[in-house]
Picture 1: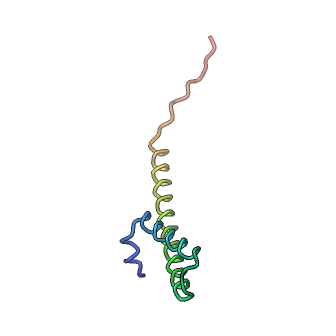
Picture 2: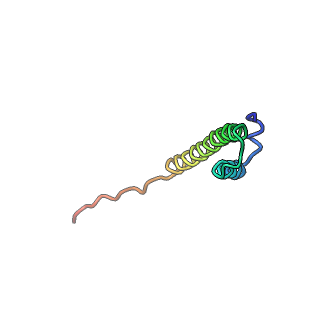
Length: 82
């Protein structure tokens, strides 16, 4: 599957497909050739999901970083004894 085909998948769709592949392989009801194809597809789906998670993490870190820049700490008052 090309990158363009993966980009059409949502993260959730890719995870569901990956889970189904793992379930099918766990059951052992697939031929050797089907198992190899499923493993290859699963590897591609795993990489895609990791990429999407990394992108989400980077977006969150960017948002948190910009929130920290926009926050102006209150001026600390200095205590002056009478």
